[in-house]
Structure formats: C-alpha cells, structure tokens
Image 1 (cartoon, rainbow, N blue to C red):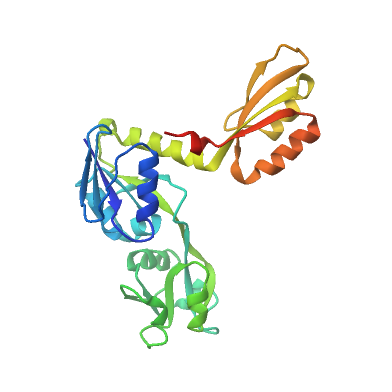
Image 2 (image 1 turned 90 degrees about the vertical axis):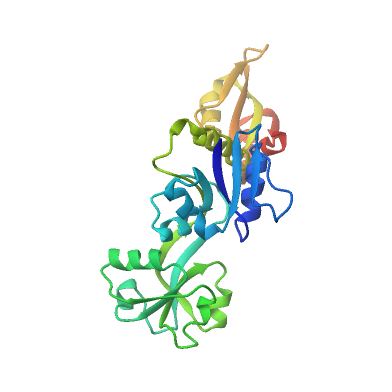
Length: 281
C-alpha cells in the first residue's frame, strides 16, 4: 500500500486534500485524524507537519508526499520533486530597509533572518556571499525592527506586511515555490507512485484546460489547428457534409474567450465549451 504524506495544517492543507479527493482518494473527515486508510485506492494518508514531510519521504519512512518546493529544498532531504501541482504559489525574496542592499552581493557581512536557513545558506553560498544566517520560526518581518538582523529572507505575497515594517524587497527572487508531489528516490517505481502521479496530473489538466468542440470549414483546418493546437494535436472527424469537419481540442481556461473569438472570425460554428473538471467523478 502506498504511503502518502499530506499537510495537516497551513496554507497547503485544504488544497492538497481537495486535489486528492478530486483524484479519487478518500481523505479525512475529522481534522483530528492522523492516518486515513483507503483500501480501494491502495493508499494510506499520513497527516504531518508540512515542514516535516520532505524529511519523512527522504528517509524512506513515507513513499511520497505533498509539500512546498521551498520546504523540500530547505530540508536538505534526498527526496525529489515529481511534479508541480498548480496551487500554493509563492515567491521567496530578500527584503531590508531602503539603503541596506540592492543586490545579493551587497548582503555580504550582514545578518539575514529567515525561517528557511537551509535554503538561504545554499543561495548565499551559490553566489559566494558570506553572511550570518539567523534562524527564526516565525514573525521574520519584525527581525530588523527588533535588531536581530539587517536583512530578511521570506515568502512574499502582496508585500503589505513588509511595507508596514518599512521594508522593501530587492534583488532577484531566491525561489518561486508552489505545492509539489515528492517521492523517495529509492522507492520502488511499482509501488503506486506513478498511479498517484497520473491521477494528480488528470486533476491538474482538468483544472487548467477546458474542452472545445466546434465545426470548421475543411479548407481552414490548418489555420484552426494553429488556434487550437491542443496538448498534442486536435481531434478531427469527418461530417456528412464534406466541406466541414468536426474538431476537438483542449484549450487553456485563461484563453477560452480569445480562442472562441478567433474561431468565430475564422468561420467556425457550433462551438461548445466543456468544463473537464466539472465532468470528473
């Protein structure tokens, strides 16, 4: 039975549970449950602290898990990323009071406070920057105000909290993170990780794309294919009228309206949009 680590709380917890549920797995109903066994799905779900998941997976105690890319890299675990899951996006950056530093190189000699010491130490080492990394478990934004550090490295969303402390981001992002599926590198590939990956990929695809069906003049198929290339190529079927063909392709949700306008301009008709996610069981 495949052992999967799932965030028990935090920003990734609800979205991870929703994705597993959409993938057909049974998830916990009571937040106090620590282990859920899904015999039909052939998995056991272990609800763990997000920061510990990569450690458990890397040690081989758990076969795979869902966590943040930032937490995976910070852990130093031997676990590896299998696929991005499309939620929990965040950007990890340096910030300081204006005038402190404008580039990573200018951090040299400063104190850097962060909740991700492994990630920051590696980033600074990769850039050849000597600095004192101060580990904090939370409230990193106040470290400079309290005199603990000169620079902070933290997840930045809107930047409102930083601005309230008189801080501004600088330099290129340290990391762009999101939720990822990870696995133990020594795990047996036949133990079900690939089945899980395919199921989750189906959810990601359904959330990202819609299905577009339409009729197209046969002599404009090449142009229609440019507009709706699909994941590989569109499906083209003959109609009773040889001057027309039926076409089907997946289209990114964010570009659906634009694509439909282009198809109408081309002369397509009977355009039907199907929400793949709504059709999943």
